[in-house]
Structures are given as C-alpha cells and as structure tokens.
Image (cartoon, rainbow, N blue to C red; front, side):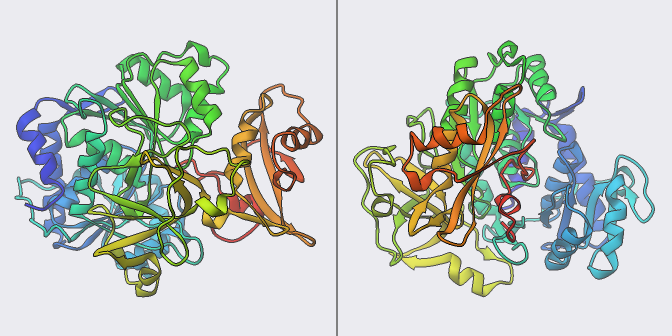
Length: 521
C-alpha cells in the first residue's frame, strides 16, 4: 500500500474519535475527516477523474484544503498546490503546465480562474465559502459513498508543487508518495517522544508550501494529533490561539518569530504549553532566536530543507543536540555533503560555527548536496533542468541545493547563504546573511535585508534595507559606522535605505530581487 493517504487511514482506525482539525471553534474528528475525503474522492470519480490526473488546490489554510488534498490522493490523483495570493498570470502557467483538470478555490477567486480557464485543461471549478458563476460549491461537489483508496506505486507522483525559480517560469517539482511519506515520518521522529495523539499543531505555515504541508499538516494527521489551520498570519490571532487552546507544537518561519518579539506586549505572551518550536524556510537571525528564548520557555530548533526534498534534510533536534547558528545534523535516512565545483568533498572544520572574520570562507565552504528517499524524482518535463540539478556519484543521486555552506566534525551543517545571493564587490565575496545577522543586533533595527546593487567601480556594492524599531531615531551614518566597527570594510553597507516593511513571500522569505531591482528570485 503505497498511497500517502493510507497514513491517514491508519490514524482513523486507531484514533477515529480524536479531533483531526480545529477551525474557528469547529472540530472535525478523524472519522469525519475520512468520510469527507471519501466524499470528495467520490466526487472526483463521478466526474471522470482517474489515477494520475492533476487536481489544483488554490486555497488558504482552511479545512477544505485538507479534505481536497487527501481526497485527491484517495482517488489516486496528484495534488497541485497553488499560492492563493497568485493571480491570473501566475496560475495560468501552473494550470497549463500541470494540465490540472479540477481547481478547488475560494468563491472570491473563481473569477481569477475563469480568466484563464480557456487556456488550460480545467474542466471543473469547485468553490469554497459561497457560490460563484462557473463553479460548483464544495458541498455539492461531494458524492455519496466510501470509495476504496486507489493504490499507487511508491515512485508515483503524489504532489506537484512549483518552485519560485531563479530565472524563467516556476518548475513543477515531482514529489512521490514515498518522498512525502518518508519525510513526514522523519519529521515526526525529530520531536521528543515523537508527535503524540495529544499534541496540538498550529497551522500558520501555508499549506501550499511544502513546510506547512509535510511538517505540520501531515505530521499531525499521520499521528493522531489535532491540526489548527489559520488562513493568514496574524500575530495576535496566533498567540491567542496558542494560549487558549494550549498549543503544543509551533512551527514558523523566521519572520513570524521576529513579528512576535517585536509586538509592544510581547512580554505578556504565554508559550508555556508549547513543547516544541521549529523554524525553517530561511536562516533565523541569532538575535531573533536569543530574544524569543529570553521571553518564553520553549527553545527554538532550526531546520533546513527545500521543496525538492519534501522538505526536511537537516534539523537541530532536541534528541541529537542543538548548535545555534547551525541548520543541524542530517536527518536519519538522508545523506548530505559539502562539495566544491569538481564535486570533491570539502573537509569539515573542527567545530562550528566559525568566526567568519577569522577564516577564509572560500576555503571551508562549498555547495550542500543531498540524497535520500525524500528527494524528488525531478522537475516535470524539464530534462535540462534535471541534468543540472543532479549528480550521480558513489551509487547515489545527489541533488544540488544551491546553498553555500560548511560542516564540522560533529556533523553539524551551516548555511552561509544562497549561492545566487552572494555579492562580489571589488573581487571580494560578501554573504548577505553575515551582515544581516549583525544588523539584527542593533537596538534600532526591527527587520533587515542586505542585497547587492550595481556599482561602476566595484561591480556590486552592499546595500542594507532596514525597518527601524518603533520610535527609533537611527540614521544611515550610524548604521554604517556600526558595521565598519564590526566587519571588514568591504562588507559594510555603502548604502542604507529605511523602509516601512520588507517585501516577503507568503512563507516569509525576503524577495531580494525586488529590493535590488533585478529579475526573478
């Protein structure tokens, strides 16, 4: 039985009466969840959807996302998750490329789908939260019956999310039933005592993104825990839910933790029920982590992964130790290396994190590559991109992450920065994350990002974009002097711009291409 949804079926048999989903005061038990996924699967079959057909889910974090996700799998289909912030131009490529025949979306977003429907293979649009012209309401789409699970092979594609891409159009990532099942199991085992039936996981990470999908939703549902989806990130809403429902597991991106500690009443928040805090999506500034842990009881454990790896490859698990500044050790079942341009292994340092001003990073760093059962089969229909993404060596198929990093003799890995974000100024390499870490330590800085901008003499120069703390009177000269005193001269920001907020993706990553005025990120 290879279908990913069988993990939910096992939970239903053991914990059928437990709450599976809690949403705005309404509980859905595991038995009810299974019945409704069956009704959605029956609705798909009634409309001729066969095994391997694509079903796009264009929703925020609402219960219908979960029902459509696992209902699609139950029918043998492939889920194509889409960011609900996307508009017609963006979904046109995703729908056209995936050849999805069904779209499940909010009633308010149906017109966006209708704008591109004739250009795609979409035959059925299902609306959530109301009626909409051209769509069938979710409740009416459901059909009676308790259909059997359509079995799939372990290497059959289960979910096809899309990467944002560095150039050109987003690429469809082919994630199999084995990829996602193995990674959800690994993620659950990284929690002390595992994910338990009495756990309550808050779903502030978007479900269209692999982090929220695997590490939060599926880990909860595969282990009998309760999942609390939230349709958008709101600090007050999230903290109130943590306190009122005594949430036990909290996963977020760095921007969420930064938002929490920068609230005027942050000291009054109660996180005492939380037994596990995880962070990923991008590196969390050490100062943000330190401040959060000074304010609240739980420690924050950083991990690392990519859409192409389902996602988790490294984690600072409480079970294997934590090293602040590290992405952790390679998770069980996954292999990782740091390699140079010739795919030769870069030796580890004795112990990290290193003082980046005391070492030559170019001598100890390389690209992080990974291999394992969680790694995608490839990008859909893109043989050229797949040839660049993988290297066959030592009997394994290694995926190139595009991240520059190093590792130490204790097995901890460290990401210096994205390869594409490195700034080359006057022949010197500058990694923005190092400068950003320093800026977060300044009391007048609430948020910061560093990017390279064109410079006639140096090729590129370093520019800092800063969101000041409330009532701060910090100046450009002050920021530059602060950095000059603590960094090599070539690394300090020669330009500083104060902004109200940084442009971020829904998953909290800073869109540096917007700051630098360049192409896709």
